[in-house]
Image (cartoon, rainbow, N blue to C red; front, side, top):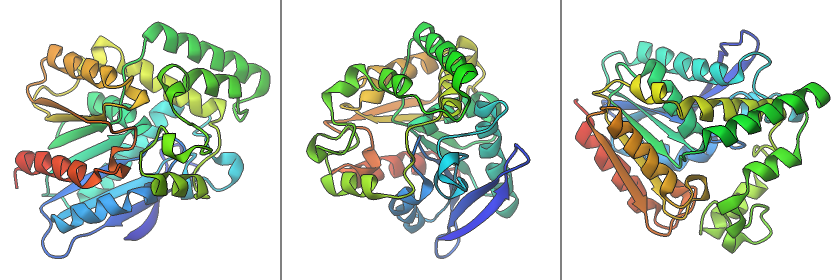
Length: 310
């Protein structure tokens, strides 16, 4: 694994990026987009698996995350202006930079959790030229509720500022189906993340796992979710872009499979020609870190290999 930095689209921050290269001639590129409050280093095992299959893998710690966040205060803070769009633009910067190094390789993008929502927005704006998109751990939220949440975030931001961390907002977002699980790390066996208690313990011990999101971070998340819910977002995705939706059927982000299934139906309705969905039995949110992760890895790779033109 090699680490480097590139300038964020906000013109101020440096983005910490990662590159995993295979031995021998590569057969394609896969860009990874991580979820909220985590970082790209957690995807090293998956990246090495893809390396073994001949793929170059790239990813970055997004603004407010991992090694990109220069201080603890910056954890969970995205950008002063247009935070959702800034995250999308940074994803595109990494893609363009990677294409310069590997101009002739098929290019796939994988996004998990918050990264899945960002990927859905990304492919409606920059989907042309991709060999495929893998949407992992996503959901389908009520636009009315999400807009109400964003309005509340805006009101609280005016009162407390964009760096404020609101437990009220956090508890509201992580409600409903999340309540069946432990969200704190106190009960590792009942974690919403995974049934693998070793992985869950590592998550809570990881110093690069961020604290509660700032109001600015929630602005980025909710703005992205609202964008993704629009009919126009689905319709602007290239009709010939292959899409794979994967999730655990016990993932509260997707309301136990209902969310991914709705997203699948919406892509079909929008006329996307090649859309697949797979819900893994009894898996929770982080299917790449579940007890059956080898099965998950193989399933994703097999889909990629079928859609890899090289």
